[in-house]
Length: 101
Image (tube, rainbow, N blue to C red; front, side):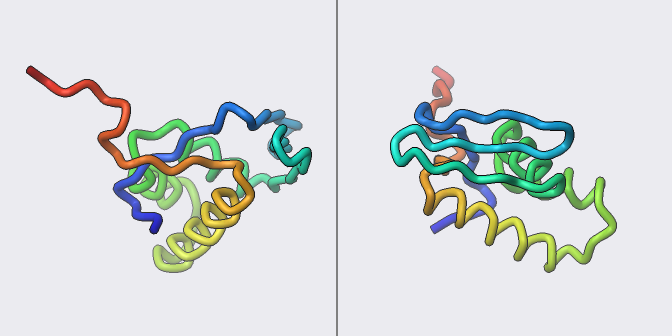
């Protein structure tokens, strides 16, 4: 189950190409590609570049004039589709981080 405290990562088997403000994601394992429009591309960039999905969501709220619940729903739907198609890996926020000693 996806939560906004998780973080998004690009799987090693996914190639990403940006075309103007849109993007194409290619899953090398399934040989399927997916096109993302400008808004979905921005969501992808923020989710895969932020410390967690909540930080990406907050940035999107600041950038777009949208109702918070509508954005949360749209972001959750997009991420669910990306995960389902092997184009996004969702990790617990603390996975891959070094513990302090």
